[in-house]
Image (cartoon, rainbow, N blue to C red; front, side, top):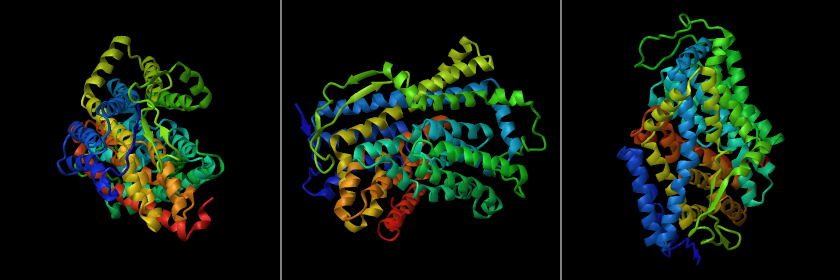
Length: 543
């Protein structure tokens, strides 16, 4: 027995969109205004979504609950698996005293907090996004900044905002590849178009981060470093996305930014060393940083070097093909091929698949876990200490183990019920202003799903179809979905949950949401205006 999605259950698209937005309104209200803990906000939002799906969209109760539970399981694996293994590696370096050496080695390059944020949150975080994605960069880089002495809220917020630049090409380019598969548009063309939008953001994000940290006047003191990081990243992002493909822009851009910035800081230093106002006197200023041998520094960094090697290795297609063969694939009974998508969301009536894949070997979290075993051997962590430290990490993350499944359950019930499609159709009805709002459609998709890949799968075809109706180049609309989506990543409940787990801010999800929400909206407006200009005035930029 099948159930067909209804996209306008109220007989008025505006009213239907209002009903579909109820879970979003609830989670916005609880996080931004009530500053509620993530597990409370997530639980309330997913419960309201199930009620709207059943009472308004007439979705069968069993189908609605099955979709929600499937999303919750996806939140446990692979998402929570990534979070716990990433934080476990960080905790291991702290417990063994190696992070102190890492901290001092970074301080030997610069003990200025502004420049440390550029190196770790912007450049190293982008590298991890390109190699793994799915929460790994925020979990690792935010934890590192806290270890360096950053205020946890700033560490989490800065890493979420910094993660804007690389998200569209994250996980070896999978968001762009999925967009091509969903729409039938050549993947290289989508890559080229995104590569003619995001580099403009990539130039300003380093400046944006430092202004947020220290104010405009202080930013001018390190403007040369901001420009080196931003321009080197943007240049490689543009070149690789336009002439190589969607797989490598993040990795090449991040390497360019890290190397360029490190070399630049060898010959240039800011006039003043900046630290947070509430910090104690610098214990790790460059004058009193202990001197370590190259071997000692290499050993301290080895967990993150091994981590990087493993996530790159896991991202290679030949390797994936081998290790993915041992996956357990479960067609979810009561949901697989039960829900029918129809026009204009689907080109033709399509039964939605519900495949829960336990890719226990090819999951990024497994790459991190293997990296943790290798790191334990290098650092001399015995089996009993390894197990006790893992148990300690798990205990640290018990609340995120509730929050993450809740927000993934929310994403799935909104997708399978058609609520997300209602909101998309409402934005698509903006006529000649659609190029502007196409970016917000991507923003909405990533907010709901926590993933640029999922947002492209959800709204990619709708973007292409609507673009043809309003006389816009479809490749531009699909690219805007991905580029606009990156600005929603920083406020996605899934991303917020990962960031708070990594920085010890569990229960403070509302504070972090409030920290990032205005930046998310402003950056989305910038992408929207850019897309509007490219649609009508800068058409030569469209491949």
